[in-house]
Amino acid sequence: MSVLPGKTTIEEDIGMSATSGIEGEEGEAARRPDVYRFPLPPHPIAAEQARIFTRLVLADWNIPDVADNALLVAAELVTNAMKLGDVLSIGIFRRAAAVLIEVNDNSEASPDRRSPALDRVDGRGLLLVAACSKDWGWRLDEQGGKTVWAIVGGCDESAGAATPSYEAED
Image (cartoon, rainbow, N blue to C red; front, side, top):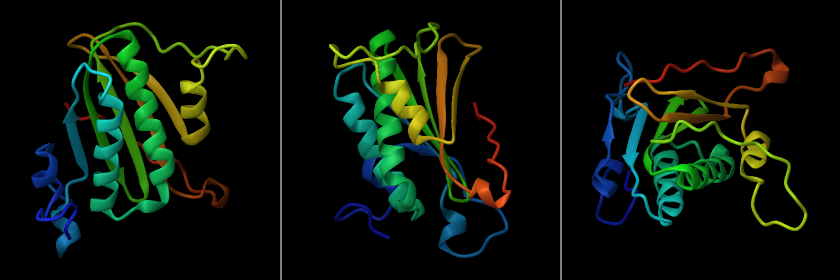
């Protein structure tokens, strides 16, 4: 699979680190990692880089059904992190058709989910994250800073399937 012209893997495209694929499966899918992480600069371009990174990861995993929501969630989480501190990294984790997006930053301030004012253009990011994800939350990190996460896609909950659980990897 070619993600960008002349490149054969997402690792070659943007040089991010990835964990190894699922053990025991055969074929190309078994060699694909279930986790991608990418450092982001403390610069306004970080949200666009997060969208590009997310698009490449979802293309590599061949799960386009969650792309619209995942792109929006990634950009909003990064944009919010940029307002409070420097963005350190974005991580994307896969479990079947569900995707966990995590954004780490160096601020320990909790995400502020406020009611948007009609006369302001900001203040709707976390409302969008909540609307486009199955669940979202945040946690303080042991080394300082915090991680804000959201789960996008996955099983049809109306069919009785549970939301997948994720354990963050250090």
